Image (cartoon, rainbow, N blue to C red):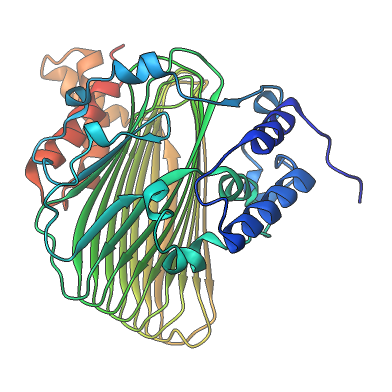
Length: 439
């Protein structure tokens, strides 16, 4: 097999790795894992459309760009964190600007009992052994190229633990702000999150921007829910429109654990999200609900894989996509019910609207069943607004533009109806409405 072609993108990040002075560099096992992942990234290069996992997302233009690590101090100091406040979310928080932890903007004093919350850079200064399993991971699968890059270069992130039996009343807020005025800066964050047996937590993750830029951001998260734990995770992605954001999330649910994930994708020029969930314990349950709204030349690619690995597990996934202009959305949802996962119940719905003749959405639900007594269903649609509904609204005197917006909003809004925090639910719907086309 011929070696992959080296690109300015790969070269620039290898140069950054050679110059990096990352936290924890003195920890032998961590340094070894970083080297192995960097070598794998250098050997593999960027993925291309010949790979099934990247079939609909070309990275040729990204490959010609060079990125440098750095922190625009002037822009970072000018950040007004109040501009990114979310209704009802005023509890513990970690704030990162251009991938760098900002203690002056964070709220980590007087944490509730049972909650441990700190930046990765700080956690590595203490006993790093509890992080070894997650941070020594070697990514070898095709399609994991950016996870390798992140594992090699991540210098900060979130370490969050909830003790067994602890029920954290206030949501925890993780805020990531792109602030540099200069283009072509790269940042990489790594998260390790664990909920102990019977623990409960609401987590709100927000990617935002205080200025237009063309950054590269990568994020890898390892999330584990122990027996009976419950997690509600809301993720709002509203990054700068010129930016590239690559995410790789792995979630493991042990016996009777429950996770509810709500995702709203609005920003970014090129966004890729790999979400891998393992229902590893009997009677574990997952609910995922996501919406993307695209315009211009935005490109968002979501690759979700849910594995039912134990008895009587359940998953329900509801996704909606809206594409306008010359944008492109990609959604691949794979559900695998493994041998021995008898009695599992899985459903997946992907419905999408094209608001422009030049927009495109590719959706591919997949279902593999190797167990008995399983309930499973999946469906996907890509279409336009219903002309009869438009005609009905216009016959009531509603202008065409407003009628289209009303129908599109109704199409998306139902996704967040089950979110219990009313203020946050209304905020997500408001952000969604603000991104819908006005003409």
